[in-house]
Length: 502
Image (tube, rainbow, N blue to C red; front, side, top):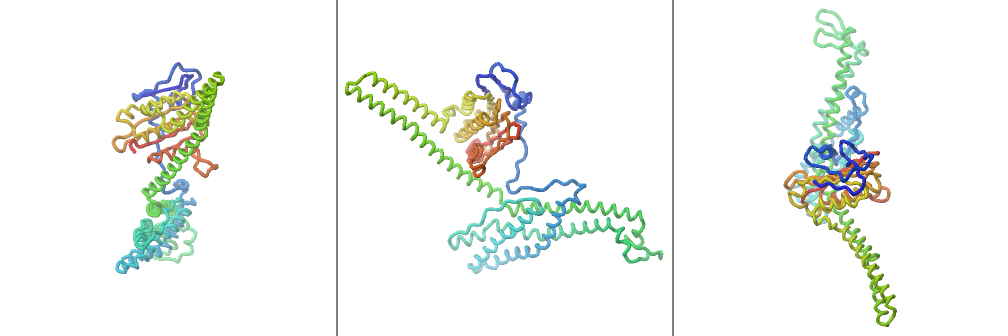
């Protein structure tokens, strides 16, 4: 365990359940120490916080919640029933295209030139997928992300194999084949339940126009018959049929929603991007941003060296040269001494600038481990910062240098944000190791008691990108994750998961 606060009036660490998010009213004597024995409030409260499932990146769910009582009358239920109508109307054509895609490919195996056309037929399944995603967006309330677009390769064989092996097209063809029986069963079942429910609830209105029927005892009846001698032609039986019809209507809503959910799952699974493709695209984007950030950082260092340190060193050389000339020509030694003194001061300032540049590239404190570096960072902060490092983090060996550097700069950026923007009175930093072996991960959790409202501003929003967006890109470059929770009024909680080994 490591806990550090600056030498000034301290506050209770943010996240301590005893005083959650509230600063103390008076100065506390000395630094606040946080233990890791499992009984300390800060540790137990922190480990239990920030749980929940991450949303599926393949789709966005826009469905409104509908209670069981309102289900038959909700617009969502009728939109989903409309989807079943569209599905049954499109199913014969979609199924025909799917069967044609498979049979045409088999038929073209002998004439190789025909395989190019078969490949284009497979790629054409993407158009069906786009149409079904659009229908799902408007009727099923789910916005499925589009897969990566098809890119035509150069060369005959590349075009041939890339078309035949188009995974997105084949998954769309599979969707067309699988949903054919589902569309028939779903439409028939839902329509039967709806017809029976509406018929039962309105039987008392239209039964008067039914033809007379004779029972086995010779009596005549007008109404629905169940069996040979049981007719719904009395007020009690009419009421019972109405109640039964209402029950069936509620069942119809559930049946419709069930079949719609099956279509929704198939749409996401077969017509959306795969998790592996999203991962590849995310890593490619992250790699590109990381290269851009690295290039920008190098340009900034070059600019700082050229405009700052280099200019100072040039001035030092000129001052020393002028002092040398004065001494060589027998000039006033006092003036020469002033020039040397001025050059000495400029040299020290240049050294300070070089030290700051080097610290921005790689903090020297990291040479002694992440815990020591965070201690130094906390001691320099103008805010009280409590750092709680799990001994298991470094007990199992040093982290990868890239992971240590990213973890350090994440904490540094978040503490800086708390000082500049959050109006916080204290920051709590938790560092712990999760798991073991190749799947082990480093978990950082930084919490401040500021005003909240922080968000990740990507390029294109407000004309700039926030520091949090840069942190997210830096974390993603090593396949890590960054989660932000910052409601208006606070507190702001940022959780970063990093692999122990890159």
